[in-house]
Length: 141
Image 1 (spheres, rainbow, N blue to C red):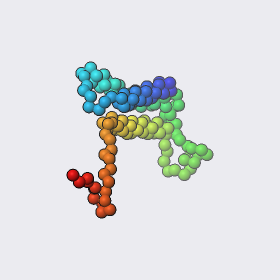
Image 2: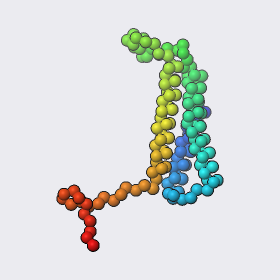
Image 3: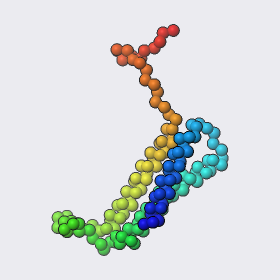
Image 4: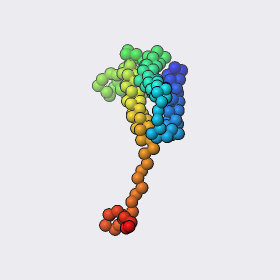
């Protein structure tokens, strides 16, 4: 549990630091070779945590400490699942579903963070005043 939570906290800290750095870095500023290598290493490490370490730590935690094995069947409160559902489901299936959900969530967060990084500095164009007919008003010269 400690390894799982530590890896999640480290990933959140890395992502927060990258976004804070992106807010103060001027858009279009030249990038040196060293800065590019450090940035690539940080992004690689964050993706390594998100797609390698965190799902592994979840599967290890659920399999060992929680005891979610293939032979442990979900019966639900009052054996509801056993009485009314025509299939059996093990805790291992739930464990694997949560691991797959972690991949999906991290992919969505990665796309959102990359989009925010690429879109930083883009400002909404000012709305041009329109006439009653919907055409833009232009000042005459």
